[in-house]
Length: 115
Length: 113
Image (tube, rainbow over all chains, first blue to last red):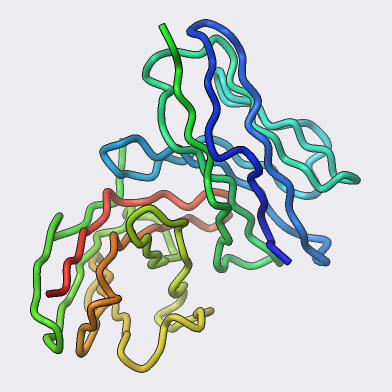
């Protein structure tokens, strides 16, 4: 089974609208972290937001928020007030266990923001 | 703002040659990682490094690969005898004492001919 599943290969959103990128995960660990990264066409990986499995509040970073539903094992990224510069590939990732270690990435979602 | 740097940005090599990819992690970070991304595919974990030793590695990280922290600032990935399928973007990442986020470098695009 896939550890990280991103079911939307591509998404479109109108500029200034909000968009939700889906991510579900599979783990038997109690301690894990969930991440979202943005990869523009230039190729770099930009860290956006982190949610720990024990965090009770949903993480927020500026226009990014993570809708964490632990029972459903979902960690959707919400981007509010989309901008043209948000057009990129978005990866959801998970790190399992209490120690630093590998992150497992999903296949990614390509977001296109339309003017 | 501190950032992870990687050199070179692009490397072209012949199959069977050795390559060394270099990374300078963020200075106060203690955990270091290498990932790769074959063109059009997802990012794959290779290895994590902490306290001067490998803490975890994937099945991709076979005997052809090695990592080293030769001094207080650099972190290197060596591929001893490159294969065509090693062509990919290689990302270095680092994280601090509380590894809640791994900060990635800009990547080295490796092409094996």
